[in-house]
Image (cartoon, rainbow, N blue to C red; front, side):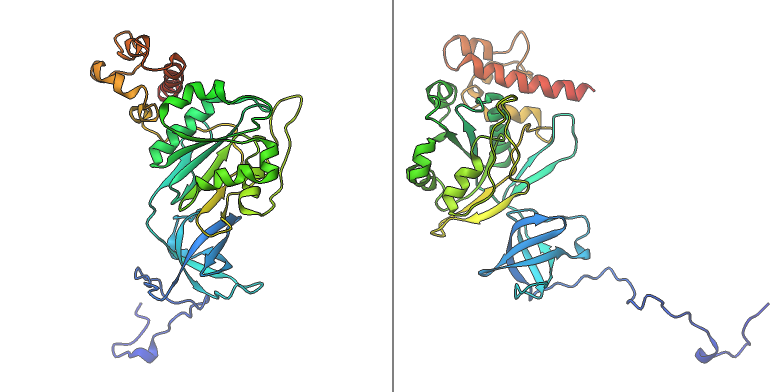
Length: 334
C-alpha cells in the first residue's frame, strides 16, 4: 500500500529526529594543524600528564586515535584547554612518529607486548651488587631488549659498599658497555649522582631494574625530587614495588631526561626475533661466521663452542645466550 500520493513533496515526508543530537559520522578527520606540541610525562588510568611548553596539563586520548595509545616519552599534538588549571582536560589528537620503542612481555610465553617507553636513546640497567644479589640473566635480557630497540645500554651498579663490582664486570667488561659503580655513602654525599648524571647529559634515559636495587633512590638523587622508595624483604630477598607507573623527569640543568619505570621481576622477549638475540652478545657474534647455515647456536656443529674454547669469550656468556634461545624454543614449540 502506497503511504504517500503520487505528487509528494519534502513537506509530506516524515523524518525521524536524531535523538542523540550528534552530527552524521564521517571518515574525514580534522587535521588539527593548530595543535600544540607536548611530551607525555606519565599515564594514569586513561589520564595523561603532558608537558606543553613549560607547564604540565592533563589530557585524554581523542576518539579519533582509535586503538593507538600514547606512552611515556611520546611526542603528541594536544588541543583544548592548555592552561593547566585545575579540573581542565585537553585532548591528544595525534601521536608523532617514534624514534625508538622499548618493549617487553610479561614472560616468553606472553604474546602481549607492553611498550615501556618511547623515544628514549639510552637504557640504564640498574643492578645491586648485593641485597638483592645480581641477576645476570635479567641483565642479559635487558641488553637484548635494548639492542633490539636501538638503545645504547648503560650499566649502573649500586651498593658497592656491600660487594665488589669486579666479579660481575668480569662477564660484561669486555663488551664495551659503559658502566658506573655507586655506593650508598657516595649517593648520600652526591658524588655518585654527579658521576651518573655525566652519562645522561643530552640523552633521554629509561631506567629499568629489579625491585629493591635502589633505582628510585638513584633517580631521586639525580632529579632532586622524591618518589616513594622501598626495602628488600630479608626472607625472600626480593624488593617491594614502590614505583607503580613510569614517569619522565627532567635533569636539574635541563640537559636531559630521566624516565623512572616500575621494578621488574621478569623481562619477556616474546617480541624479539630469536635470530636477533645474538646481537646482544657482541663478544660472541664474530664467532658465528663459522656456523652452518640457519644455525640455532645450540647444536653440535655450532662454531661458538670453538670460539669460546679459544678464549675469545667467557663460557658464561655462551651459557646465557643458549639459555635465552632455549627459553624461546620452548615457547615456539607450545
